[in-house]
Length: 130
Ligand code: THU
Image 1: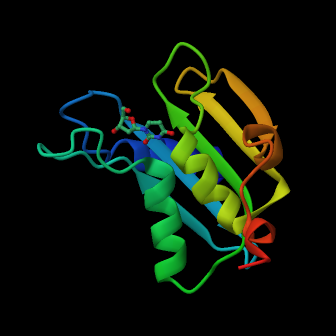
Image 2 (image 1 turned 30 degrees about the vertical axis):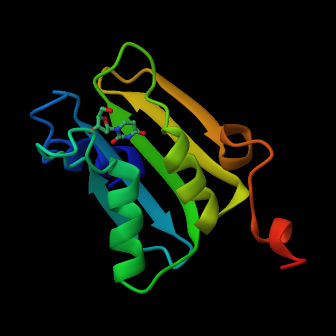
């Protein structure tokens, strides 16, 4: 199954009763294993947890920590774009060159990279004097 197809399938499981905006994400780790995540909202924090964060959590829980490729999908007019917080979370585990495929359920697709999503990323090098 392609990474986008995995994201499309897991999106169906999203729990988004407050936004009604279901998102699916899939991460292929450098090990080759694919991890899936969907957004999960709750009444106290209706923004919930993003799909990308869910896929990262699954990857870390399984013992992988290096991202080779990312796909994100939603039912949006233009390819869904990871939120700011998720860009930082993805950058923690992915080189800038890692491909990110953003797509709609209709198949409108845009490819980018971690570096293009988060130019000037805050990283460990900024803390080298600490
Ligand atoms: N959402 C994601 O899952 N990923 C993103 O990158 C953008 C936003 C979710 C969070 C919330 O459940 C809903 O979309 C609306 O913000």
